Image: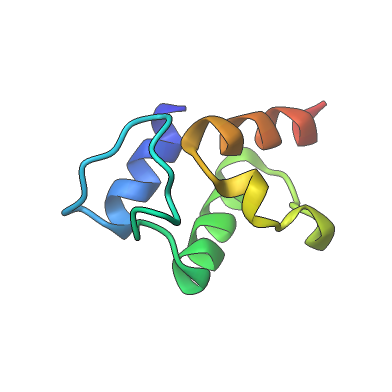
Length: 74
């Protein structure tokens, strides 16, 4: 989960957030930064996130992103 936090801090170093902060609602993620996040996650974890998994509910919080990564790594 720390790696995801690090990526998000690179995307938006000025916001304060934790694992349960609603990322879209707080303006930390938007469509462009989501694409950047997905690229970083795929590279870091050596996974491919299928297009059908790129939905807001999978990227609502850091916790939900982490759960998606774990599901895809299985």
